[in-house]
Image (cartoon, rainbow, N blue to C red; front, side, top):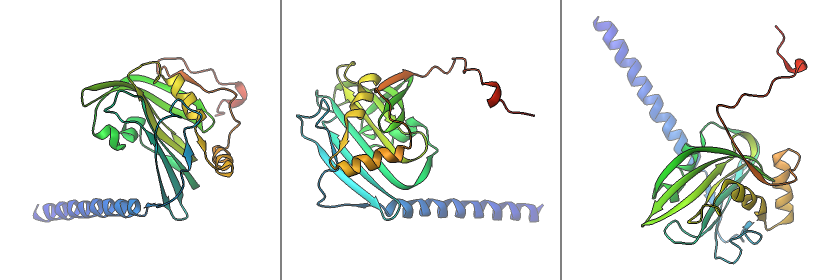
Length: 229
């Protein structure tokens, strides 16, 4: 019995050390992201409803891995609509294993606000690929807004994440947000073409949003697609 208890303690200690080591490795991986200083804005909102409003830009890089470009306009605590978008271009495809709620909660603007997610999920069609979206309400400094948040699910070389919020529910509807993302552009034509090429899919004719119904019956599989036993 004493030997068994000792062995259990050793296993638990090893697990604790392994967890701590993994956490430290995660921090080291995150620390490799370096903010690029003095760079001109990579993304523009000039073709969106935010064109006439001030915007902030930031860029980060992980050497030989990826580059992330951010654009933000407005604030949760003001009556005007606001937007935050990050587009990450990767040298190799990566798989996102977080759900959209967990992913959005990493954004500082949502961490510092009172957020209430709805059970309303959509698929957004944009030139930057198919995005998963969720509708939510947010309250900050007494201001309540309606929002649609989005991210790129699955595996890919182009990753998009962000949200659009407004006191006007229509301005922040999934349909309008899908077309807002579609109107985003890289300031460089070369960067814009490279980002779209990373999507690796035929460009859609129109932007749009489709409500995802978990109770819907999936389409029947074609005979030639059925798994043969």
